[in-house]
Amino acid sequence: MKTNIPSLLCRSLFAAGLATAALAWAEDDGSSAAVKLSAPDKPATLRVDVPWADINITGVDGDTVTVKSSLDKKGHAEARPGGLRRLDDEVTFDLSEHDNVVTLRIAGDNPWASHDADFKVTVPRRMAISVKTDAGGDLVVNNLDGDIEVNNMNGEVHLNGISGSTVVSTMNGEVHATYAKAPQKLVSITSMNGEVDLRVPPDTKANVRLRSHNGSILTDFGEDVLKTKTEGHGGGDGFAFAYGADAGRIGAQVAREAREATRAAMQVAREVSREVQREVARAKAEADREKGEADHEAAENDNDNDKDETPPPAPVPAVAPAAAPGTPVAAVPAVAPRPHNPHPPIPPIVGGKLVSGTLNGGGVDIKISTMNGEITLRQAK
Image (cartoon, rainbow, N blue to C red):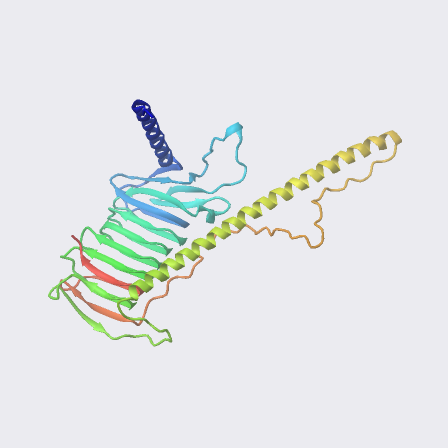
């Protein structure tokens, strides 16, 4: 069989073109928004409060906060075939600014349906950020000089090229932080299940407190630079702690299982929500049909009564048909505002192994605690 090389080449180029177009379409999917700071020369803060999403924040020069998301922004009217428009309130995001505080939040009837959403955000480099997630999602922050506050339930936290204060609290997830400059403000990182890796410049001056129940505490700073003492194992609260080389892997496994369980629960919640919405729509359509039939029958009775000169009967309000006894009826949950903090704060970690001391003679406080996972204090390269 003779191979048609030009034909194969054309088909390959065409397929490559389709793949490129598909990739561009995927990159352009979603929506974007931007707001300017009202006072660029004054301190500013970005507040992010979402149930579950992957978030990437990058510091840049300028006075504008921009957001690119897989979700549509609030008020965005998506064009649909046949001139159709959506009447119910879909899940969107809202970006607003007031007095140099920029707020990014989820809007819509069911903010929890934002699972698997992602946000790519650029902020002025000196801007402070406060990020809170209620269920999960990974957070990445790059090249930021402002202070960082993170309250995360399930997901990894990666902070790269930072220089301000860092306060991170996460239930299940690793934390990796690398300082571009020696920190001059508090560094506090707490993870219940997950390793913590902190990298600071070699000339950093700090007072350090590193605490772990199940996991090693490691460093590559020399003994002449990092002077420490180790306290005994505290606790005695009835928990059996597994010390040793496998502790970090145990903590990581616990974190992975917790994240998977949360994802499964969220998937079930979404399916139940969709089924409830379908049941409500079907019930409404049936009620509308019954009402139309009742109105039509009433109109015919009016015509007959006019002919017989009999006073028309009093109108009977149309109601949805009553369900037969024993017929299951889908429960319609009341739509309530999402609580500000549905999960309890992470309790302080006490007991375990505590290593404290000074780095380059002492200075800023560096505090790291984890229940299950290794702690590593390294020199940033």
